[in-house]
Image (cartoon, rainbow, N blue to C red; front, side, top):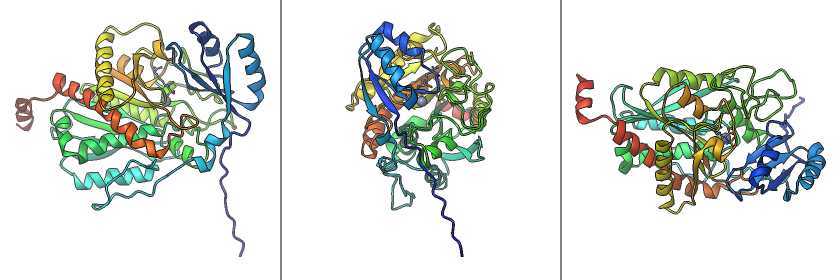
Amino acid sequence: MAVTILVRSRKTYEGYKVFHITPSRDQINLLEQFYGNPAYDFWTGSRKAGSSWKIMVSPNEIHSFSRFLHRNNLSYAMNDVQMASQPENIRDVSEFERTSSKPISFNKYLRYNKMIIYLAWLASNYPDIVSTKCIGSTFYGRPINMITISSGGNNTKPSILINAGIHAREWITPAMALYTINQLVENRTNHNLFSAVDWHIIPVLNVDGYEYSHTTDRLWRKTRSTTSNKLCRGVDGNRNFDFHWMENGASANPCSSNYAGVKPFSESEIAAFRNFVLANADRLKLFLDLHSTGREILYPWGYCKELPKDWKKLHSLAHKANRAQMSVGGARYDVGSSTHLLYPAAGASDDWIKGVANISLSYTVELPEAGVSGWDMPASKIEITVSQFFEAVRVFGEYVTENYGWTKEMFGQAIL
Ligand code: 0X9
Ligand code: ZN
């Protein structure tokens, strides 16, 4: 009997290089012309003076890009990408299954099915406070699950929304979402955080991309939908929202890692997110979109240089959150608008949440980088990273509780 063994090959990134560049303010504008070009993948970069930019460049562009850097007096270091994306560096993928005697641990990156098992375990063991819901499905038909943590009130209480994994390769973000879920539900001392407000947490929005980054291409960022180009798949979910769509920092080329899609909400994952938000907009008070890497807490606008009218409130709350995570040993996060601190990029979740859904407190968090590439944070560092930032999440939760949370009287009225 003939047996066919299918070996799925992983993308190796052989010949690709990552350039480490520390540009001056003027030189940043020079680099920005490569943004959205399919041969250039911007990994990190901040407008803060002295910040190091990491740009991955395809083999056939390395020579011309190096010449460009020389011509413009931009010094750089260059590393192989390959080692960061090979299977042996995709470490510690877990076999976790939560049982009463085996608590979840944060020393492994979980695959999506394991996360779902954990959410279901929580829902059946904490039925009074936990419920799960499928908010839609991915291009491949995988369910997109959301967990709600609530002390009651029939889904009418003011709420916080946390989204993770819109970008596939940013593995620390689903871990951050799961840690937040774990701390809210399984650590009784945190139950005050949901006595007056509800929490909705989507641990992985771009499930297809996340799984693909585990099985095939560690550096995959986008969704996995087909495009007009047979060779290039996927849309950057964080360019697919209908607010100043495609105006800035987004590409119309399906081969770019910042491809915005044929139209806003072309991606089923992003449409599912939109539907949930619009159906609950009047009670959603604060939104965190978790990303990596960079140690930044960003607020709108990201599509233009202008600041929203209430930027001072956004700014001071973000600083307070930063101070809280520093008080438990975290290094400083920079705080500012996306355009001021990073680069202009339109069609992102944070701007749409504020500009269309009218949820005033909207943030993008860039969690820290570590490891050779920045993406391959060793699993041994997950717990320290997420537990430190949980102190910032706590500040956001307390703020919403103090400013919008239900009082005892309101609970009484809801029951009547
Ligand atoms: O470019 C992005 O989508 C985010 N950075 S990442 O490196 N994780 O890809 C930042 C988005 C900031 N928000 C807006 N530009 N609106
Ligand atoms: Zn991201």
